[in-house]
Length: 100
Length: 171
Image 1: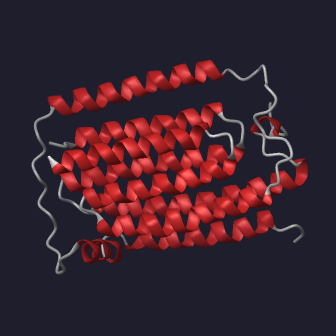
Image 2: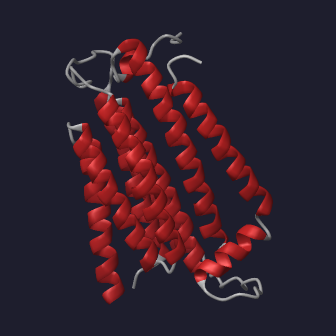
């Protein structure tokens, strides 16, 4: 029997894979893809609880999360292009103009 | 039983492709693994009785966002891969250790928290004049969540203008 606990553990594992990607990779495009993985983990949680509680509000909020993810991807990739045009690189370690 | 088999298969594919996304050296391969990962998450939504969200996932994520990523990967011509040189200031091992600690914590919270509480009584669903998953989600979006829906559309408009301004060479 598959309970919401299974879905929550799957979601936690996917979330952690995304966090590891954000913390260990240097390619900023990969980091953005890891953020998409994290948002997907959140969505899995929302939909699992939506099914468990027989309440569709979770699915509505999952749609909002997808909309925010789309906006984030558009703006983030615009930033990547602007950065690449200035420095000819997508290495996150070279993004240190505002470093303290 | 069939549900368990489907769940474990999908979970294995989702986590496997997620690991490949994070570990692959070639960025193009990474994006393609991301598409597969999103498609398997969409299949998981079907398993969770959310067919409308599964279609949205395929359309927006696998169809829209990933194409955006592919465009950027193709535009950004990498003469030297970002992982080529090592930075001694980066503490990758500590990152892995902290992630493992957070995973253990999350797992403990999920397992202990869910085992202790009694099974949640199913909340009485609001009486909606429509039936079917898509109709009910649409009904909620256009009644109770109309203002957040409009704010989301405003956010997308602002993001679109912002992306154009950022990516344009000269204003």
